[in-house]
Length: 289
Image 1 (cartoon, rainbow, N blue to C red):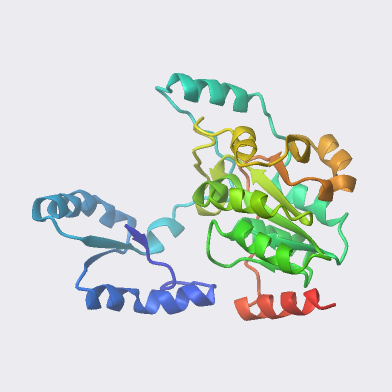
Image 2 (image 1 turned 60 degrees about the vertical axis):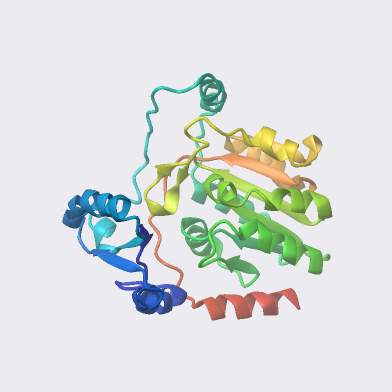
């Protein structure tokens, strides 16, 4: 199943281009496609999947944005119930549940950016993290990702290595980190002293409807993960309330990894009114200042 971005009211330029040609590309590869255009078409999923198994063929279900845009609420806080947890899941979930975050993402972004200078570069994750950062405090030295979910830390380590006189802050999320955890040992291998990863952990995929991540379901303990990948315990911090965050802010650059627990709630902000080229050009220019 593929989300068929770029065909309806799509603000991201790259998605528009890909959306126009994806069906033709699949046809050229001799891959059968089936379009799910409305939520009522979901009922046909079962029959199509059954055909795939019976006929041993490849089928791509192109899911139009119409399916989710009419019913999805991106701005309501979600709660999750999980049943039949295994022992390890229960243990991790119990530990995670001791955290009761009071801050939202936009609260954190305001506090962070109020205490940064022009030498502080921010690489913001795709979706609401980038959108909220733009509306809180837009700066030319902030890079807003418009694609490549899961690659924000990879971009951060690249910039940190070639801009040693700048401090780089990467705005990660728990869902994004779970997409590409392999970059973490790469970061510790190079150990740049000008890179700080800030994981805004809301336990959900905030930009697609706040579906729960594996962290939320009790599988993941990031404290163990980053320690196992070589991050120094003295340069790791967990933050769950604003008083602790404000105490940490003056020494933010001393840390390699900061996990900030936030509520699964998105601010009602609009899209970023800049093209990917505009974002990239002004960011590159800011690095030469």
